Image 1 (spheres, rainbow, N blue to C red):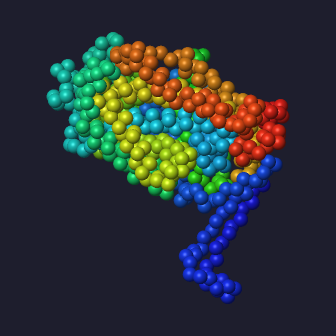
Image 2: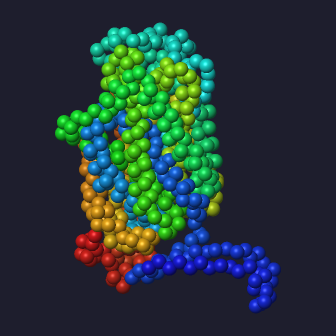
Image 3: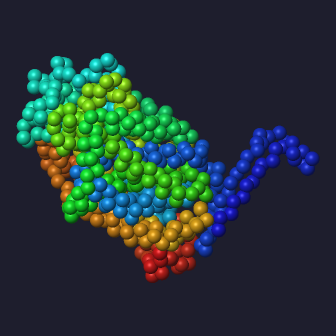
Length: 611
């Protein structure tokens, strides 16, 4: 039962006829009290204690802006192309329906009902609080290298503000004598072992690796060198944008996303229209959408679909919990989950047309096959696509537009990650909430200091290591534990009742079955697959030394270990017998009085069988 009471503090002049009041500062103020009553007691939540989004659209744009990131542009189109084209959509949509959307919905509902960040939300089952710290630390790690990619975008954006793009010709200080401007030679300038996308001697490739990264000045991850001052300035700009977007909480970030979440769609539409008018564009689109059902016999296709849908939606980073915690209690987060997750996946699919129309143009222009120019990651957005743009009329305009899109795609995703860290820790340690602006600055500055490692001469090696290990198996593990904690220990039936209190209806049987059985099973399989398929790190022809893989697993374990370490700490910090300690650990904090009474829900078979 949800009871809402609007209590108005009546202005002094309206009470003067009843009783004289001393001079005091009384303002008309509406305070919403939410009484959540269940069989085990009453929870009180003061609606005025936590700030809320200025408008509903602020929340929606923030979630969309976080979920729609660089991977939508540089990863999904290539995965779709190499894994059977249209056939890849079959496992992709399947995993969206049975795991992606349920997990997305679960996190939004969890944050909205409890109105807490990723750590303190586990007052519902205290022993799992460690997983909150796990996802917060992972979000912090991701900020180290994700901000560097945004800094690259800023560097390219400023470099584009010239009559002739610097990656159009050879003869620049960073170019080598082997630099070759590609001409349509039916691929004769490539040997049989090198695809066009892997050719390191084009002006665009040399500008990225030698002009921006200075990769040629490093022998590997053991030889980093000093930070590049140009990239350092760009990184400072990123940190300033993040700080002033987040320093006032959702009131400020909710307004920034009006630009950062909508701009990529405008630019993507413009690039799509321009792309499909280019010669060879239809060849690229046909290659993107070709249907090869035989590829579905390959287990790697299913693993790629599972990991892509998971990382694309962004569940598990604590961001969705943090964002939803600032919603009004009765907000329809079910509709929000369906809407935002669908928009995210449709964006990935549509971006493929903008990408492959240009790749088709590139293939025709240079007389090579689509597979020779198709690539993913930084190579696509910092080498291949910029090179294609440089050959178009009005290339400066198209380059500026493209890198503005990359900048805005990255910024709001980075804002989400940093908000997860700030909200998660500020809710746990009240002194941090009291000094929100200072804590926001400290968080932003902390990511800046660590990110300096990624803008050295060998910084790309550090970035590759962090990208592979900081948010790889560890984030999958974190969400697996989160799903088990909510669905099994707290209980799907109780979680469903919480949702009913917020929105007036219970989740259907489909959602409850997904939360209890399908999603945890899906995550367990993906975790095992990620460990089994893990191999030594490589970057093009460079093979990382064994010690770097050890460091990588150390980074991954540093976050994952919070789960067992905190569980052990919580157990020994609880009073009572062995059984009572376990009971305190798995019982919601507001029901701890029931432990002494022996009324422990989790010790009954009914709890574990409930759906």
